[in-house]
Length: 419
Ligand code: PMP
Image (cartoon, rainbow, N blue to C red):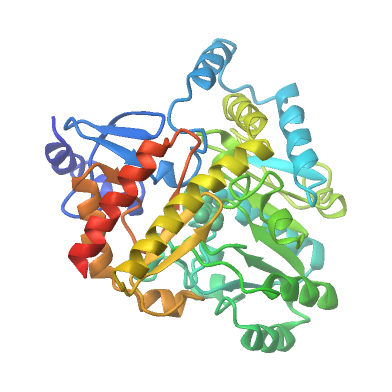
């Protein structure tokens, strides 16, 4: 069956025909047959250079041969035990060794669970109820954080089914706006348990913090006893070996992880200072549990992946990111295009916007029709990027120079047609 037929068939059994909303794009999404290295192949016989990479996890590309071989051996030993394994300690040590602000870690199954649990821990530790997030920050699909969310929440209306009582303690302010931030923190200083932030806002495209913004967050949290949570589900092990806190030189109290830490298998995690983490059950009184927590296959894939990620790896990935960003910048200047080329390390995006994008409000002013045209042109020519202006593109170590050159040429064609 081809993608169109599968989509129509799937809609009868699966809401909207997809298992997660961002996967549905018009007129219908392609259905995947397989992925190898930098390429993903659909059931219709098309092959695409993939910059979606499952929305971030596949930093080693699709189906890394060595990883698949070693996981195949692991599978023979069982897939879940409901009892601890040595591999969990190995992975925990690797994270603690790399990330300067993580002393202890709990493995869960998704980024959503990670942020839900980190927020509970912050509330349990401080005895306070309120949390502060940023407009367009996406922290998963649980009730407390679906307030002005990015990602799929940027394109579909506010979710039904969330009681007002659940979100009354969630405050949301614009990213990169020091004045509003300081005002709202001051007004709520005695009730704020946590500030949760994506250090790079990657669910409204790709917006970096202004110089000093993360430092200000750190200072406010220190002053008022608020727990600073970096949601590193995307930036964790993506922007550098020691994650975004190391990259920007600002350390949070807690950090949440997902995507890369599971090496392409389902996994999330949260970690941070020992004095905080020791409050997690069974060591402490903040409850957190999961049948598949620390799943042996995800953990082994995580170990395999982190072992590959040394400084040379990140340098080479940054070079690839620089090539794409610089080529697009040159193209923009030569052709006087009204776009913004953004990103860092192996993350990039284009905004169809004539002004720099500093936050969600400004991101929303970008030309989403132009973005759709751009996305479709790329897709027709064998390049797959996330289908929304409010997502970010990722690069793996398997993207070759030939892939990158082909990509910027096709992007250039699309941008010229839009002009
Ligand atoms: N936080 C951030 C920053 C994310 O980007 C995402 C997912 N894209 C999540 C949390 C939720 O992770 P998951 O989809 O694994 O639940």
